Amino acid sequence: MQLEKIVATFIIVVLTLQAGLQVHRLRLISVEYVRLLAQALLANIVVVPILTVLVVRALRLDQLVAAGILLMAIAPGVPFLPFSAGRRVGGNEAFAIVLTFFLPLVSVVSAPITARLVFPPALAPHIPVGSLMATLVVAQLVPLLAGMLIVKRAPGWAARLDRPLFVLLVAAIVLLFVLVAPLLIKAFISIYGSFALIAAIVTVSLCGAVGYLLGGPRTPNGRTLAIATTLRNVGLALLVATTDFPGTIVSAVVLGYFIVQFASVTVLRRVFTRGGKPSSEPAR
Image (cartoon, rainbow, N blue to C red; front, side, top):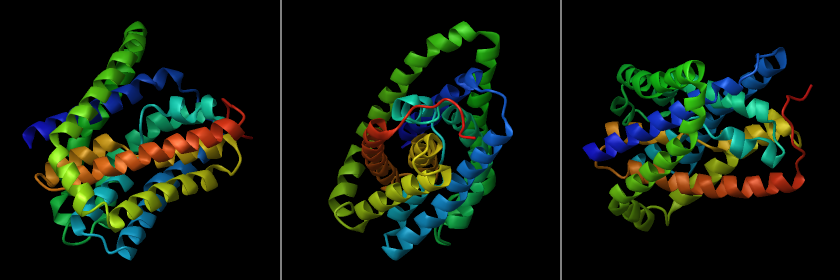
């Protein structure tokens, strides 16, 4: 289990380092960006966790299954939003870059607090707010700031690091899949044939709908926020799962959710690519 935790920590460090390396693309935050960012934070930090709690309660999921899904709900922010939710899908690339930086930054504080609020009483003691926040400062905030420092001091290196970091990230995720394969198989056999798969699909769908509506239906901002809200930070969720729920199926549930999330975003990207017009600025 110690190796799983090391790999999970590596994943979140790489994810947030990549986000920090995007800071050179940030523009001055205008009033319009502040409004969009507020909508994004409302969607990702408030609405999605609340809806996820309602889903897992309505379906009466096993507590450990619910824990895995709730961990993804409280973990916003991924570094590849400019690629996944930018111009290629008719989205707002500048908005995607803003989210790439601010969602991981805010989640350092929001994730521990939200975890305590949304987890059932029987599971809440597994996630001490203070220790989780300290862990995120080291594993998420420090790499984010390190990425910013690299961009400022050695912009050439920042550009060269992008592809190697992506390769390392993919390799680490594959390795973690291998490490938890027995639990993952068990989860799919004994759990994902039940309401757990339905819960993951419903939750992912709600994430996309919330982002789309709050960002603005049929607008570049709506397309960007739909994908940004659907994509949860698997590194953060896995770090908590391997630290606070070792030897359980929670990590496997997180990875199962990640698969559903990946498939859903792939579909969203295809739909948006066909119907969207690209934008690099916020709608006025």
